[in-house]
Image 1 (tube, rainbow, N blue to C red):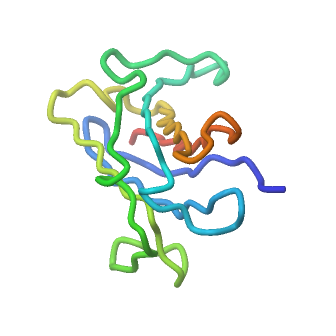
Image 2: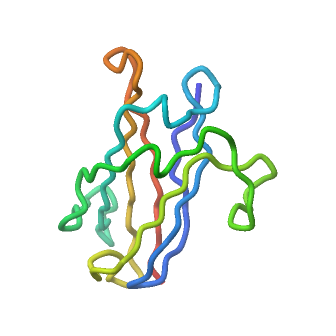
Length: 136
């Protein structure tokens, strides 16, 4: 059984961030862009006193993201990845060009990616990737 857990990090208020992860599939093989039919991303601001209460940021709910643009067919290693020696296969940069994300300091944000598998999508659960970020 895999464990459900958020990936924690910090982001500067009004800043941009590059999010990275290693995504294994249900059969313990590495997920590739060809394995994913669709990715949807949302950004939520968590309530300061009740984290289970959250608000979607305007313009950041169920945004389509291209698997080819954020996933790699093999594990990558470079100076940005410092978690281990194996590498990552997911990388997405959230820019704050329009000034609408990460606007409140000392608050938690949740970035959620929902990945729908390409093959037999109705038989496989959607894969959820979550980053919990604290704005400093």
